[in-house]
Length: 104
Image 1 (tube, rainbow, N blue to C red):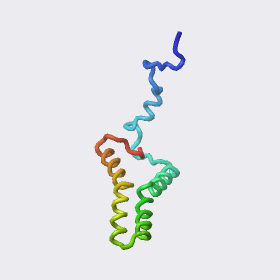
Image 2: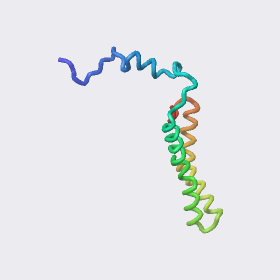
Image 3: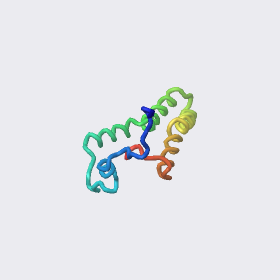
């Protein structure tokens, strides 16, 4: 009796045509992504947590703190742990090749 959920490991997950099309070395260098994809990428970059949290945290810290110096200290510490630290961790991982870029 065969297992209905068993995977045939001898069969390729992609057809040969799909493998050829998806190979980055074979795609022409001059091809551009569609305009909607480029716009979506820019909107994604603008609305990323890092770009939103920096001004927001600074504004809240300046509003709530008793002095400008303490507001900048609190904002700097918050931003380090909230967005700059994780962003730097991911960026270093991408540059070292340990992680893939989110925008292939």
